[in-house]
Length: 250
View 1: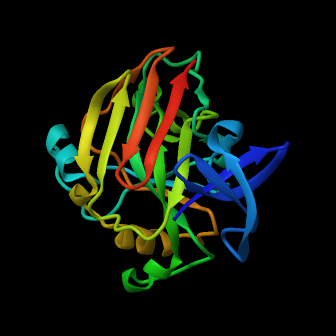
View 2: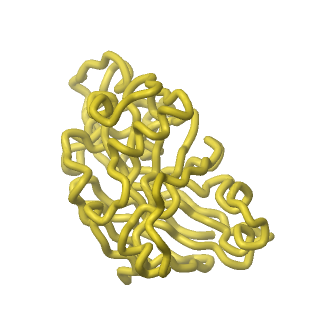
View 3: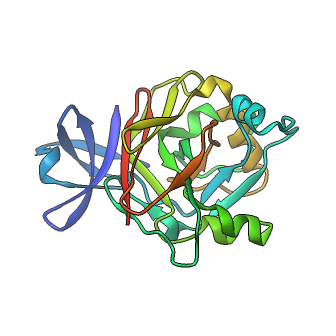
């Protein structure tokens, strides 16, 4: 199943995506919901980020092939950082290139969507608390990251967290092809089987630190091939069984 969040008739709603149609839902995908008999053509609605997280937690180096590319040792535990909720961006939306930056990079990532409030879970307890998975692009002002020596400013500009287009449920996150397509050319091409820390390990680790709320996002790290963008560039994060997240830089 693929959940989407969309705007139709000036109202924000949830739905189930199937091919080019969206079946409208009544209620909340993080609680109780019912299918309605209302259907929308995808071309007639505005897709939004598929959830509205209270926080976006990101993982640093988490792909073996990326570590090899960077000639770095594998971390012994996850390195985490956060993006503010104001960085959230949706599918087919614009990414604004900050005036104070001279190098903005893309980073394709698989995102975990948390289902309900959780704290202090063991890895074995995680599975029932994940709603599903979606595409994420960890946009980064790399020059500011290098200048600051830490990541908050570089990662936190409004619109620097594109998410979507749908939350895919009932899939195995441990063996999914993941790509970043930049102006029609594949620049990142890997598989989630390259992740150093699994989805269950990441959710458990982060839940030991902070309470996770329904709709919170955990971005699981990026594979090799990170690169820079320019104004007017088109970016696509493509993940097997989920879909394609498209954005344009302005």
